[in-house]
Image (tube, rainbow, N blue to C red):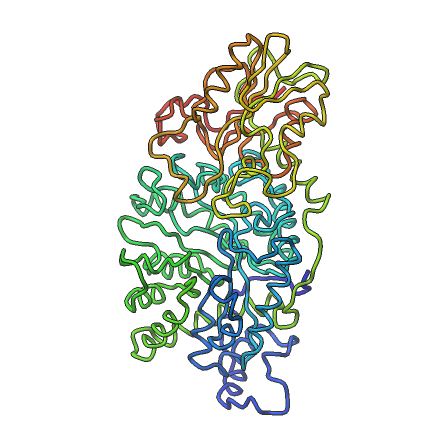
Length: 597
């Protein structure tokens, strides 16, 4: 861990000091004494002022530019040439060696190149470690947010934030694009599992993740600002049509609490509010976030987000101008950094983007780099990932996230000496139980990273277990059947289901075979949202548990009692969307429902 603690910048970071201005005015980098900004004993505000005063427009524009690793992998020297401020790994953008060592090697290569610039300003590296360090093979994969919302346990989520920060920092990286504080109001949305739940109260409580992450000195990101969970029809990157009062009541509270907790960055949503893209919305970014909420960190765009302002492909000068003037401080390009830096430079030189706006953005970005200690400790501090301690924490999180929806005849908990038949495509598949944003952007079925499948967890407890994916071979001699069914991995956009939410044909056929055997059937649903499921004796919502499937088995056998409560309303039919607490509709299982033993 880097030893410097992350703190809030507050007003002092944005303030100027007369001394720093005087030093900056001299512009004398050739003085024998080290520049003030390299003196770690000085206050952050003074270091920022000193460095800012020495920077050219090219330096400043570069600091506002974030590129994906793939854009500079073959030419790391471009980081110094263009004074790039940040590198990121988009979903699945990984080094050739996806193990922790490969990530650390890559990070150090990029950092070494960036430090070759005249000002020697380190990069800050961002990654979507949204449920553990999920791009790194062998890392601990925690339940996705919807499962954590079911735990109703902010202290647990804070622990997960700390553990995730440990594994992120172990590979050198210093900035996590998490937590997602969206309030999902329509489960057809493909990012529902990234939400802690349908009520802003849950996401607000789970901002404890920020405390855990930043307490270990990895910068957190509150995303996606604002209203992405409220789009019409659950349309990804769609339009949230709400009054300002409703926007503030439903979607703003988690962000307000994130700011109160000192979150270092905020990412803007792809979505629109009443027809206007958030990436170009000055009221939302500057007036509301930076003004009314007094956010003092920096605002980052989403992947090529400003490119969507005019609805046409390709950056334009007008989009760059509108996005930066709206209040975006760092722009995730992520590939066309040459064109972006040229356009922004021209806009500043023409007076269409004020120098004051550029300086404000740089102050915010540089302050976080100083607070993180990047100038003093720029390289990876290598350590193991996927440790036994972190996997034990993840298993505990899986236990607490299980929601027992139905238990007719008290078929659960299972008896360890029962003759058990296990079926279903999600019983023995780490990729399926981990979901999207795992090793790749959309996720992938199969043994994509080390872990314990749900089937393996069951076999750890019971010895008389038969498994067949499709349910072939079952008969009445078994005491119980366990069907582990549900969704296969997806992420944003590709996960939208406007046609409704139900099981696929393979799952339906599997359940049909099991039900014909005339024995009790327990359905374990592995999914990122509620689905319509045929009748069974018991139904356990396992969500997307990650690599520690043993936690599901712990609940099935009563080693741990189910304590999870629904973070979303469970629809009565596949088409009953949207359905939310207090809307007058009657769901199959209400928000907050959850049985125990």
